[in-house]
Length: 182
Image (cartoon, rainbow, N blue to C red; front, top):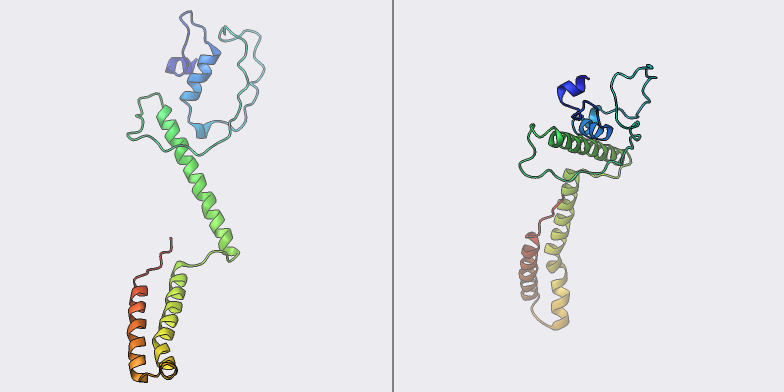
């Protein structure tokens, strides 16, 4: 009777309660987090019913699988719409919270298994490897210029100067590439 007086359950004109409408109204105005996990059978009713009901007992409730909610529409719902938007927003927030907790737990397990690398360490490693490769290329013309000049019959200094010029130009092009770790 308290739910009828509060307006949570609609009454028919003759004072009876339609179970289907009452269940729908109750579900629409109940916080999903406060719903019981299982539906228990009500205790045995006294011989004289407190309210008259026009239909038989309602069908048992069935739990549906929880799926990730779609993002809320712009503007959202107000608190004056019967609680439907507030319940949906709460359910979405609760789902997002649970997804975030699951992702955090997965990352922690990956860290324990040494499957996750630290971004700062990865950047330092890439920088170190790139510097080693650059240093190798910078010293390469001095190592090979004499041999190449002898093979084609030109001055070794001219060959080294040309090689250094082109190697440095190429290294300058490669310096524009920046590693992106997301």
